[in-house]
Amino acid sequence: MGRAFVYVILGGGVAAGYAALEFTRKGVSPGELCIISEEPVAPYERPALSKGFLLPESPARLPSFHTCVGANEERLTPKWYKEHGIELVLGTRVKSVDVRRKKLLTATGETISYKILLIATGARALKLEEFGVDGSEAENVCYLRDLADANGLVNVMQSCSSGNAVVIGGGYIGMECAASLAINKINVTLVFPEVHCMARLFTPKIASYYEEYYQSKGVKFVKGTVLTSFEFDSSGKVMAVNLRDGSQLPADLVVVGIGIRPNTSLFEGQLTLEKGGIKVNGKMQTSNDSVYAVGDVAAFPVKLFGETRRLEHVDSARKSAKHAVAAIMEPKKSGEFDYLPFFYSRVFGLSWQFYGDNVGEAVHFGDYSSGTFGAYWISKGHLVGSFLEGGTKEEYEAIAKATSLKPPVEDLAELGRQGLNFALTISKKPQPALPIEVGRSTSGLVLEKPVYAWHAAAGVVLAASIAGFAYWYGRRRRRW
Image (tube, rainbow, N blue to C red):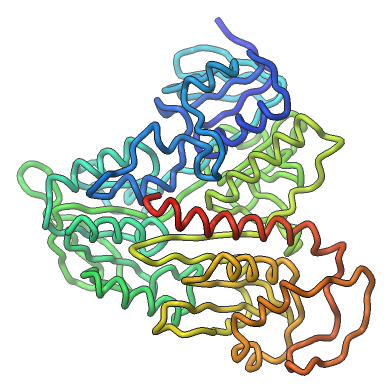
């Protein structure tokens, strides 16, 4: 028994929802598109799980955060998919894929064939057992990757009001969950092996600001060590965690956020893999021309930096999905994916945005006491990354545009003195269409060569739109 579709999306996360919407906009016919997902619900905005879903009052619940409300688009409920003739195959695990024969086999034995496959399998949460620690199956040890995880976490939270929570991991999930737990009046201790939180992105100076803010909200930090084992009570629940430094922390709840791993196993030996994901070209097309990959699982060329990267963030998932569908449906009209790496987070009353790459030398600016501050990253004499906390819509747009332009910088001290004004000024300058040699400006910053329009123009418009939406989204949808 089997079914056949023109287009199949494998995976039901954020990217799947945005791809489905783009398919309808590009004229897909009823009955041509199918989405296969292990989750029992239609695609939804995953960022809500670590934010609004965990709030103690008026928490976010489906159907309010189905895709594509995260980008101020239509909300795609199951009814929407039915009205557009899109088949949702939910609660279904695919156990094998034959790329050569264009067939998928589900765990129930059904064969589903396709002409074009869009891989949106995302990633899975790394488990403690992969690091030699047992105990993930305890009812009060929680991960946060999907809706079932979020429901389980909420149930444990409600059972340990005013209790003790230990959060393992100082990255995105750890930081956002710690904030949500503190808002729920749970005593939180954050444990991670690095010297400061968000070590993959933050500088020590930026991290210290957030750590101090968290501490003002009652969150404790235990840095430079890792979990080694649990202590269990007679019912099998965790009652304490043991750390490598010899200390022990009481725990009514443990949240684990120690990273993710892309779901590529179905395609190993069939598609080219790189950077831990599935390698694609600028049209999100894999080594098999009938197969595309998007979101966390895709390793794609970032034009701005001239190298292949795999990005783990919702913005990349949304935009890569839309670009892939455009490439599938209108191959002659679609160009190469020109993406400016973008990350953001909102915790407590804080909100930051980052664009580009955090390599090279960091130059800090702004007033940390006022809550508006940031940093630039300079590599090989050019601006390659920008971070800003507490900015306005115009300021976020400015750092996005400035980063996309990669202007040359030679005086780092002057850059620090100018601070945000540097990005504001650069973002307003018209870009020359031809190479023109420029001498040192009165600012002392520039500049041996300008950025050419052919290199920057496309990225500028995209960067400004990303920043503008992110600012609106942060102000209007704080719960997510």
